[in-house]
Length: 418
Image 1 (cartoon, rainbow, N blue to C red):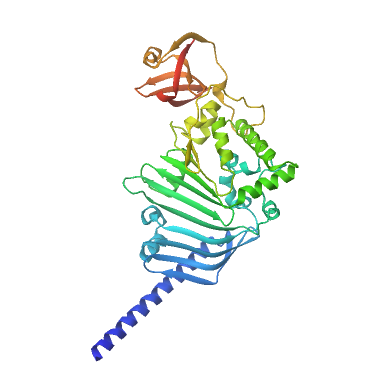
Image 2: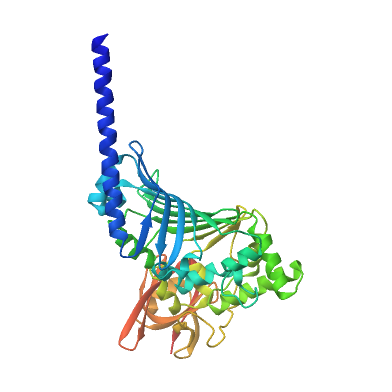
């Protein structure tokens, strides 16, 4: 009996010592993290969160003073398979892609939207993201975006958001994914998942590959929690319209808004977007680039080709919407686009009347041609290469040149330029 009592006491002492060590290490890690962040933001907290398996480090009742604005979160935690993985990350942040931590911010309250913080504004200021992120405010009075004051008018209190960032390998393959989700309570869920064909060697490289669209695909999803009908009612009242009239007005304005930014959508996709403006609706946008180019290169392509170049697939309430083939290209209004002008849009010279089909392209190697795509786009350049399912064009801009690809499935015909 004495032996058992002694063993139990020893185990208790070991457990207490281990717990004290973990608390000490956690406290030290938190202090180091706060010191590292101190030049940018002041952080205070109520208590420390920690566990061994799964490993979790975090803070509860967190107040952040950032750029003179006070934010509050119920909890901020980082978790991994074990506490040792988190300590390893503390020593070597480059292990982020190996240890697969999960960052969670629970119950975040902010007095202003994220894009109004200078430190966070850069991604939100990209013209392509701005085009998609601000669709809610299109034709809703003279608004660039729906503000927190607008939300208050709709009957919402200060928005409360749960955020989660995760990375890791995907099952049944070598692909790798980053996933960012935000649940704005009572308003809407957002999820962005970026899938790579392989694992990037660093976070910096992953971000660079994302900018260059060197990815497998991106999936953007939203789920409504009752915000849509409130927002539509609010905008209708701002313009003195009925809800039905405003919905038609909004859809027409969205189509024009996108066309001015060289994004051409057909009526099927526009109608599907309208179906996604109801309570509880789910919308998903999948982008799977079909050519080797970066976001900034889009300005060199015809506007009518953008959806095909990006491999855009759209679904509403799990119903897939396919883009119909069309030869109609909506012209941009001068001075209204946030994007670079489409350099291909001006014909450098007249083309011959002889149309070339795909098997005949070999005779035009190293000649200047114009390629017509199924979506109505035109691409001018010197034909460099023709493979079974791919052609390569090179176009010169003064002393510089750009090479880009066109897939056979997008090809309609080509003509040699005289």
